[in-house]
Each structure stands twice: as C-alpha cells, then as structure tokens.
Length: 158
Ligand SMILES: [Zn+2]
Image 1 (cartoon, protein in one colour):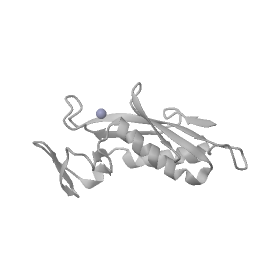
Image 2: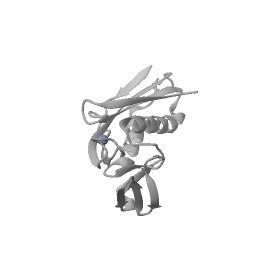
Image 3: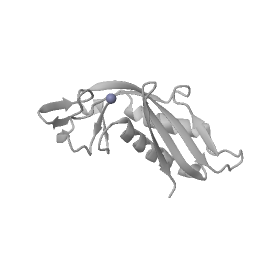
C-alpha cells in the first residue's frame, strides 16, 4: 500500500537559491520556492496498521527541507565548480568567481542541484530515515521548482 503527502498542503517547502553551471538561462544564481511531494510504499503493520506514520514522515521531510531553506545550494561533486575553499565557500565556474559566507550555503554531495539531483538526494535520505518505521518498499520524492514543474525520484529497497 502507498501513503501520499502533498508538499503544498502539508507545508513541506523550502526556498533556496542555486545555479545550473553553464546553462544558458539557469547559469546565474536564482531561486525557487520548492515544495516536496512524498509517496511511501510498504506493507501495513504495527499497532495501527500504518505503512508509515504520516507525522513521522512529515517531520523527517521538514527536517531535510530546513537544511536547504534560505541557503545557496552548492553541489560539491560538480565537475564545473573549482573550489578554492569551503569556509568561506569560494569557487569558480569558468571565469566566474564566487565567495559566499559558509552559513549562507548548503553544501550537498551531488553533481548538481537540479530538481532531478535534489529529488534523488532526498529520496535516498528519507528512505534511510524511515528504515525503523516498518516494512518500507520504496520512497518516491517529487521536488517541485514552484508549481507545475518537478522531478520524481524513487529509492527502492534492494
Ligand atoms: Zn533553477
């Protein structure tokens, strides 16, 4: 069975800045009001016959959103970013140079901060966080860059 949480209605949101290096329109720093939709699939179990407790899932996702909220999202594994320092965060992309206070950044172990990579990252993290919640088969995350466009990623049990 699946449980579904709608990020707008359940307030699973974050507002962050990012850039997509070398992209014609998205190469400059810009921001999105993101929201995160969640689908958790698993066997019903426990005292209440839940797939997973909504409250637990929401609080885990909110915690993840909070880490990203009001930060510049920096992909640490990007091939395009040439780091000089991580505190302050100092890097270049081609001939563009950036120096940003560490507390204004969220460094992520990702090749990019596209909706696709953020969805993959959050799906993996939430799947991990729900391991003690029961028999979870998969966690699906949609990271929406505002209303009407988002990327889905599913982390399945092996
Ligand atoms: Zn963007």
